[in-house]
Length: 458
Image (cartoon, rainbow, N blue to C red; front, side, top):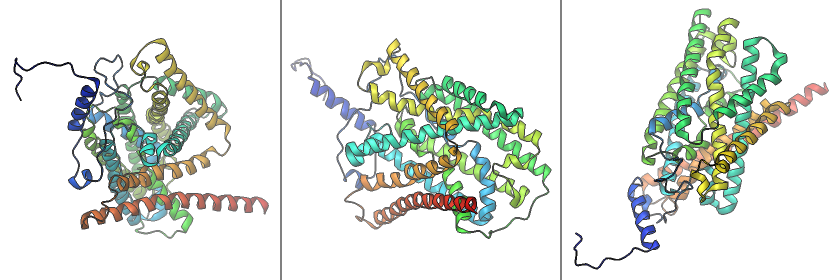
């Protein structure tokens, strides 16, 4: 209705302002299917970053391609060179099927995380999502789980950096020094407070790992004449399950998706970022895995750099150093942000650059990276423990929980139509797959421990 001068003016109340802002936010939120909107009318809640119009530090400025590169850097690291050995353990056909199918499932569960964020705009982490699902208990459980997982990932990158430096220098006695260097470099790169500033590092990470993979592919193609390619491989339950798990977990980086989406300038652009991620990782995994397996054969090492001559291996490790560091840095940044937002949400320090705000951010970063360094250097069986932690947490964060998010958003509508029934059944299967991966990992760990005890006693 047009405004007329003879209509009495009034001063809007705080309730009027909040209602107007909520309506504006709802208009900006991506639309969902009609049947999903009928499931629940969600009251608007502001996220921890609040209104950033006049803020000193603005978080929600990330472009979709920057978001995609961040997720690529967090997902694809040196572990990509373990996929050829997994293909050798399963055979070419089963491995390709698993690579493609799990890539599509990971794409779907990532999209569901985006839907959940659109439905509940205040969710900026797995802890917030846990609160929506299960209240305060769910918030604390998922916060603790995500932090533990992130710290172990940070520790793994410090350890991987140490191993790479030992390979490059042939000086294993300096492992402690290399670990400290990895700690300091990771800490410095983690200091930017916004994802936008981290996105430029992710571009360097992608170039690094892409180049390292190309070097490995060319070197193995030149040095190896090509081994016998097996459509299927004879294997046992433990070997087959482990190989399949290595392929599946190469897609499992969803634990950080909420944190990255929270800093998008336009949350509705997340599907573009997700498409960028999945196109890159599915293509790289498939091409590098099949090509390296074709030339190296069943004897391919894990990682595949062990299958090429030492000089070229050193070159590849040197080229891969940026991605080894940066992938851990992004996880470290997310861990720091999770604690920082939990402490300062709703206060002016979220967007300030004063001594308390900057000092607190640096203090949190120092504390977390020191803990990660201690974990990496002080636990004798860290590599085995990391594999167990990755399989347990990543399977839940990437598969079971997204399926639970969809079931929660659509409660009361699971069987409202044939299409909805099919999607409900699919999400139940995805949820069950994550549970089976977790239970299978625990069982596999028990088998390995018992076998080790048996060997030692004999």
